[in-house]
Length: 356
Ligand code: SF4
Image (tube, rainbow, N blue to C red; front, top):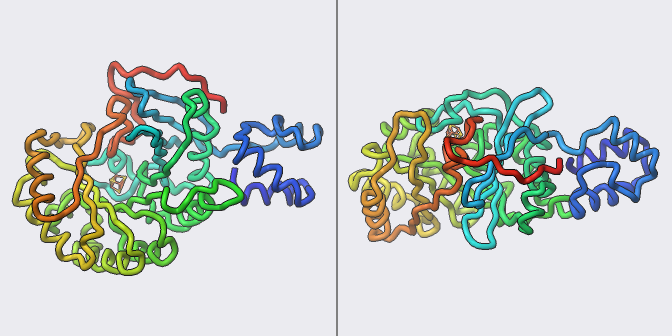
């Protein structure tokens, strides 16, 4: 459900314009999950809509909960039976983030990423993207834990900037005061480095956060890990980042997954320092180091001491750096693990009921 769908329903059933506000209130404020619950609508209309229309374009297929109850993963089914994943995470007290997908699978083939090995099946529509947020907002998970969704991150399956039209439309919808009404600064989009769209994003959404999946600062290694580095090598990426930072003056987040013995040595940290220093407004760069989450790929996690030394090297060179907390590993819901797999052994399927 989104503002376009509401307009479509109003036109299709020849409804008066004031019904738009009633729909907005029902779905985006009261979080009602069926047309039948909208008591401001006449009974006959409720019955027709309930029979002929869907509130959400995604339907719950499976829900997993981490033991910590700080991460939940939902498998959602689309109209063509394709499955996508969305994750709800609680990285800090009172902060709940929802990680959403922008494509079914991903065509960029990063060699350490579980989603990358699926290939691209198709782009999601604007409604399928925002319905992942609405799904969590309507779900019993949020209701029974008494929590509110604070942040949205486009870090699920897919490369958002390879689905620019729908992703940009979905960003406008999430910020639409009549529907989702989520502040631009509470939304982050993560890209593997689609250079032309980084510039478009800077022009169109200067208040929305950008994260860049970097993972290596040497063209040869980055190309091995991320084939997208071939059309968009580091020099082009640097120019796009300079453009973004000039336009927005906003902090930018670099994601750097530490892969044991591949990109976690002090010389590779030194290359990362040089890359960051080559960016004009490098004081706006923050590096999130991510401990590799095991998939069926042939990579190892970095040793804890290696990760700490890597982090300290960056900090000692004046670069703002943190090691990101890993949540959701036991449900394959952590970064790089989204590939429609069931949770690994010992994780519990949550018994929270889904209301939709
Ligand atoms: S890391 Fe991101 S861009 Fe790369 S294959 Fe995975 S989902 Fe696609």
